[in-house]
Image (tube, rainbow, N blue to C red):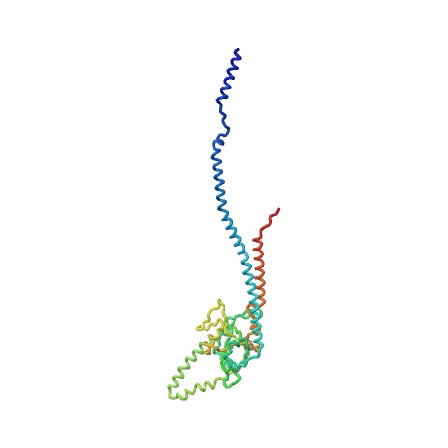
Length: 349
């Protein structure tokens, strides 16, 4: 009886626990925050869509800019190609210029006695040969330089000697007016000696002038007044020379060549009007380069210019051709690199 009562009591307690027990979830925070999580997810999705909508036009604009800038890679190739084409034109101009000089030098020389009868065509006489006769006025010589000259592999500095060629009195075959002659290259010692002797000459002139004035004031003024004429009669006869030269113009100095200094007699480049004024001649005096090849071995200086130097330029046609090949090669190289840069790479599988 006692056992039956215990079993009934246990069954009743079990039924009460079944009616009042509420199951507790293992992860309550998941269930309690289920609604907020869904809201944040929706918010993140909306913000992502808005950001994507904003970045789409920006990315399209960047692609357009990249499309334009990639063509700038071809600019160096176009520039170098243009420089190569310009060298072709320069080469042709240089060929025409040298041919013009060569044809002019092949013409018959113009007699110096008839030179100034062509005053209207002096500008067109450049690179024409002149055969002139006269005598050199050494006291009016001008040294232009320094100019280097290579002799047997040894470089020596010197100067160009420019001297006026004066007319010979009572000689119809001589020049009728003075001309400037570039007699050729001389060593530095020539100029040094010329400058040393120059003050002595000037001093003698300054001393002679007052003595003449004093003699004129004396009672014997008639006798002393005839002295200059007797001095002129005692001057030895001039030595006539015959020059074969080529008419040239003034040099065009580079930016690195200093200006001529007339006060100190420093001539760095040939300026025909300035040299003419310094020599007491007219500015339109003709200037020629001596090309006489008959040099006396016992007196080798001055050394005249060679005719080949007159048909030569600092940049010859072959040099222009080399520049053309160089620029075209650079153009091809940079254009190829630009093409490789913009070409999309194939993906390897």
